[in-house]
Image 1 (tube, rainbow, N blue to C red):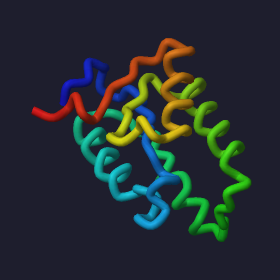
Image 2 (image 1 turned 135 degrees about the vertical axis):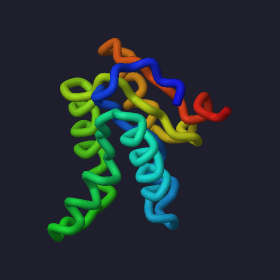
Image 3 (image 1 turned 45 degrees about the vertical axis):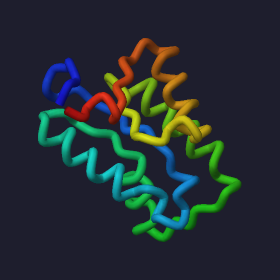
Image 4 (image 1 turned 60 degrees about the vertical axis):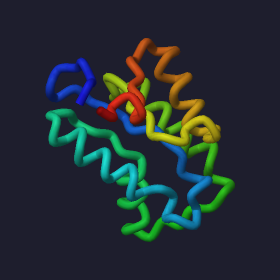
Length: 118
């Protein structure tokens, strides 16, 4: 893992979801990286996990909630994250691009999945 942060640092996972509606919103990929990052000693803010917990409580996602959900994700980046980890295929994701911009605006380091391959 090539992320120069102290163990226990909080990393927010950013990546495409909406484009993967037919593949459970790419949640598998988010959870995979959550495990990798946690095993490396980081605390993880995973929006897929947050959404799953809401779903278990009976929440139903509708497209008209997108802006509010993204604003909540950006708040997590601003207030709780030390850095952002960006999954592959983020270029086409309006939400991921906004999350990256939020991280940059608040001087949070941004790391990319593609850079973690050896």
